Image (cartoon, rainbow, N blue to C red; front, side):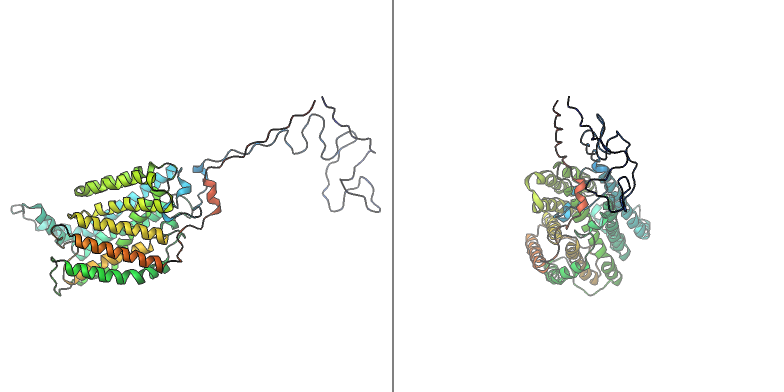
Length: 449
């Protein structure tokens, strides 16, 4: 066993610190100038920095200190987002925070149901008048006729139009509050990758989208043989459209291009999870719109297969766009397959615009332009868009025109907003939510005996 070095014989009293020489008039044992005083060892005790035999030195463990065990990701403070992520991926540091994921779903469903309650409340006077006007002894036998009467009397009125639109407008705060469940600062990323709504992006996208859709919708309405063009304006309907349709369109974007893709795109370690995320809205749409069950199942299949086939930021945008676009078309339940695919194509284009611009602004402008340019001309003829008769048969020419207009709008936005931020700039603390590998511990060298 190695002997411990013994201290040299030194005079009793305090010893100078290493490298310190006493000044003139200062003797050994006197404390250094402007230095804190310490209790000094007595004769025979170890000097500063020297431990007794078999004992650890001052403030030093006998072995290298072990790093503290990392906290579970669910207990870490939220720090969103990481750098270089697309809009649909901003929740990726939180893929293991399952509890908050369920809280976000519960909040979104709560706001959706609250919107439906608001819509029913606003339509209540029309509902009372409609059922009071029914003659139990002379009810129509055709369910389609009853449905059209209901639309004309309830949904097709200005108050009914506002009710339907405000039901979807409730999803704007619904999506924002749902994302707030993931921690401080997360709510802002419901709008864009910069964490806020960008009005400058709204203005730039409107400059190119509005003219394209004015021409496109004008041609589509001119080709529709079911519209009876007459000047019979319903000004209440016009006001309801202008005031509430932008909110309705934006609310649908926050739902189908915002919250739903973000909840799916945030799971990148477990590629089967997006299908589970999509299962709930698919079942809901299948219950509300059973006629388009096949399209809802296609949306579920896209969410199940897409993560395994398409990877990366662009791949994630494509498969989430296909899945949510198909579900968007299924929700509208148009009797025509061609018209349903048009709606799905609108949804997919809005998803790609969201990826290209890094936010929901351009997609909301496109959606609003589409709806307003359809509803206002019809309201000027005294007809609600909800009460208009669909074109009989499959209008594939109209589908082709729609695809052309959507393509032109995307290309125009691509060049007009080339300098718009597309990906997250990142938060340094977001790396805390990623699994960290501990550095391998260095073995303690053995002491020679």
